[in-house]
Amino acid sequence: MPDDVPPTRLTAHTLGPGAPALRPSSGRRAWMDATPQGFANRCLPLTIANAHGWEVVGEAGFEAWWNGGSAPGDITIRTETPGRPSPASHFGAGVLTFHIDLLFRTDPGISLWVSGPPNAAKDGIAPLTGIVETDWSPATFTMNWRFTRPRHPVRFAPGEPICFLFPIPRDLIARVQPEIRPIADAPALAEAHQAWSASRSAFNAGLKEPGSEARAQGWQRGYHRGQIEDAAAEDHLTRIRPKPFKPA
Image 1: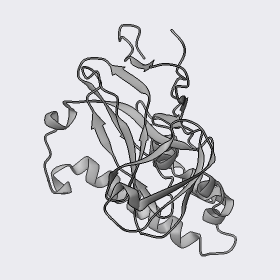
Image 2: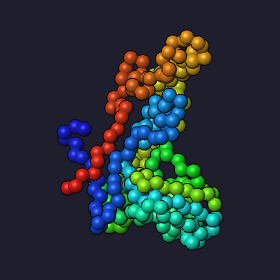
Image 3: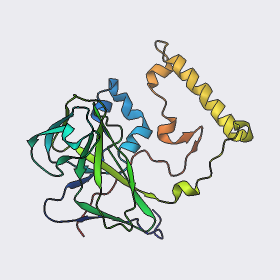
Image 4: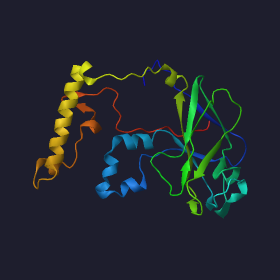
C-alpha cells in the first residue's frame, strides 16, 4: 500500500463479556486438501476467495434439524457444547439464526458483505448472504443459514466459522458500466486469448501422453504466477493475509 493511501478501518465493538471470536479466514479447506495431490489448492481464485475476509467463530457444538414447516418451532436444536453465538430459530421458514453480539463500524461509504465461509459447503444447510451498511447503522445483525431439505441433521462443531465478512465500497456496483463486445474489437486481447487457448489445448493433450513434458510439469502455472507470455501482471496476488483484529 502506498504511504499516502490511508488504511481502511474495520472496527468490531464488543457489547459486553463473551463476545464471539474473530479471526482472519484461511485459504485452506479440508475438502481441497483431500483432493488428489491437493490439486484444488492450485486454483488461485479459490484460495484467494477463501482468505478474502474474516470469520466469526462459533463456540457452540450442536446438531439441528428442520421438519419442513414454516414456524420457528419447526427447527429443533440439540446443544452438545454450549457457547456463543448460540443458535436459535427466530424467523421460521427453515432459517437457523445466530445473533452476532458485535457492532461493526466501517469508513464512510463502506459496507460489509456478510455470508458463510466461501467454498465450505455444509450438507443440508446453506448460508444466506447480506450486505450491511455498517458506516452509519447502530444496529447489530444476525447471521442466518437456511436448511435445504427437511429431516436431515446438520452439525456445527466448536471452533467452526458461522459467519464470514469483508468490506466493500457501497457505490461500486453503481459505478460499473457493463458492456458486451466482440473480442475482435480488442485485437491484442484476442491474440493473447488465442495463444492461451492453444497452449491449454496442447497441455491437456500432453497430459494423456506417458513421459510427456506436460505430465512432468503437472499443471500450468501461468495464471498462478501472474504471467502472460514474458510479461508479468501488475498487482497480482498469490496469497492474501487479512490482519487479525487487535485491541485498540
